[in-house]
Length: 135
Image (cartoon, rainbow, N blue to C red; front, side, top):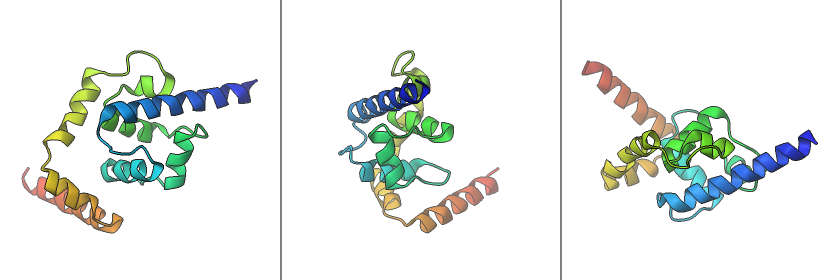
């Protein structure tokens, strides 16, 4: 019985994830590779693999809490809705947190997306250093 409930929970999460991706207009295709790439470009922690995202999208797994929060912020949906289906899909705080992606220079964002993982790490360190110097 518990196993069946967990399976239903994962499938429901997958459906909400697909809906959030479709409604976000932040990504052209909902393929696991595109989702993994876009997610990893925004996530500050250890990135996700194509396999992990595929499991989210077919209802075989649910992301960890930090990744779930990052997904909800990126897609502009409430974390509770994305994880559990409770409340409203959209939330003012989530919408405000994703607004920054719409104000970034598109050419800069495109260039950053083309960097390797190691290059992105170096850019993050450089930006952190610049911000500390400005304090």
